[in-house]
Length: 269
Image (tube, rainbow, N blue to C red):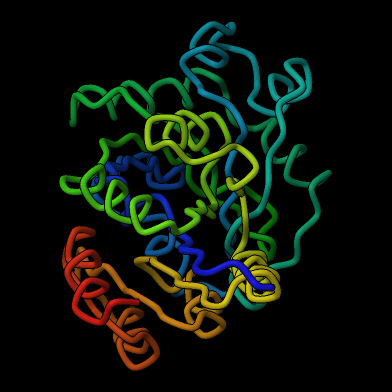
């Protein structure tokens, strides 16, 4: 007999109000408020890498003149490509090699800009954007955030209804698992550093176990999961070209997580 309902959440922009800073390495300038997907959406050769560490406990403690590539190797830090353009060719050895051209000082500078600009120091993560055609890293990216208003109230409702709650995100484990713990999500229901196809497969696999699977996300990297789910919610924090097509795919477009409670109550799902 199938279990009843599973609901799968993305993290950044969905459950967490995320603040972002990126350093454009070629222009030597900082970009604020722009999502990593926005950085790469117009270039099919670009891809996003998340680094599986809280940089405050690793990179901020390292020699600032050391390279990012050597630091990742010496500290045995994992990294994954979580979003890519259609022409991007992924080679993790090459990514490490390109990371040798970036100093820890540059990474830490980006982390410190995040703190200075937004004064948010929870759920901190970092990564890079790579260009497989030009064979280089183009941006250092950093993010932090706070749990959105209404999320705890929503989760209380979902748990009271007996739903199983999952978290599937491209973000790094060091920011994902602390969030899951705060929200009462079991560790084995958490999937960090997942790319768009991975999210779709998670939904597909859950459908073998549950009568109904719901997907909640906020951007184009959730498209496959939206299409695979029985019911889908798009949380629209900001308008963007890439999000217009999502509106035609999802069942509901909402502006905040707590709206999900009212919709599910209305239809007694």
